[in-house]
Image: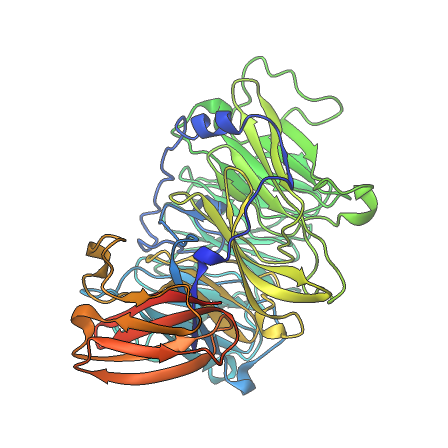
Length: 572
């Protein structure tokens, strides 16, 4: 099922809600200072999102994504009713393109099943497998990863689940269990939690009770294990130096994999584990930009930056804090008395270069009467060695999604909420990274429809620039509407489909141009409901009468075997 939007008419613009730090222009200049690429893991697929949180856990992609000028289709794929669970879905991991095709797959889990989503530019197909059809029958964890051989890794209790396509190279084949690795000899008290792949190809796994395990990816044997003797709530980060960053409930730890064991390099006290560690910049930058970002569980959360490698000469440190901490600032979202009303952040950080974005956590199941807007962006200045607030958006609400950023369009995306009158609705959100201004806010469904509550899921970006996320009940994929062949080559003032008059009283004519031979016309209202349809054969002009319909805007969708073209008409 899909819905079609033209988002150009649904903008929320203006800066009146922003608290701006006064140097947005400086930010625009700073973007050019440090656009170094994050190193690619040679053992990961060449994809936009091969592991949970993305590479470096930055929740971003360089792929150009959706803007307010796009015609957007929303695909909704519901899980079978017997495979629905009230479970934090975690988002998806994304494969490379299959050989000689424009097809790729997203893999994920919803608690009762593992699934893959087969994606092309203009289609989305869901394939599921009941977890109880495999050698384990317990809810898999929400973190996962994929390797260069197209094996997919999830965890369930103390088992590592390895999946693959039923037919090698066939994206539409059924999901097949490759193997189950029993790790109960190393962790038998609690669930496995995080998973990452080192740049030398080994797999690192953590458990909620603090066990850390390193496996050989090819032999699938355990190379090393240890216990940190403290709970772990989040995933970990790795870098190209085979360093692993793990936060427990009281400390952030840096380990180095030396080929035989994990050596502790340093640890820093943190007041609780709020978010997964996120790397700032790359090791190709100067030492002053080699940082880690994390939030703690204070009320409100502190955004903490930590020197990742060497501490710069001359660093005096911050009063009463460990010397390795480079910055620590409370994130209040401009809320009065934040120690009472701002819960510790659990939404993963979004990072580009030296800038960090946080959204206000509302909860996995925000009630219809709760409204907690707040998005805040900070930037580290390597010259002054200071962390500065850029802007605060106090009207947009992203209650529990983990946003993602397109570094090409400079928009970040999530599932949000908004009130219309006294009623609350789920929304699709796109906001400007530089200014915090809302660019797209599309109403999805009334808040009572829990299908659209993503329950803390990650938001990912596919290779075509589409936005993908999941709820316990369904998959959501927001993509550009496919246009008829050649439309993109025409200028805006000579479109192949013309509507006149526009606006009109409801009576207008559609000039089909070269599309008149064989096509189908659908007309949808502003709620994406079909109000008129007709097939067309050898007809250059089509007269339409919507005068008895409600005033407002309508979408005209002209489709044939090559794709779809969409125009908007206003009835007044």
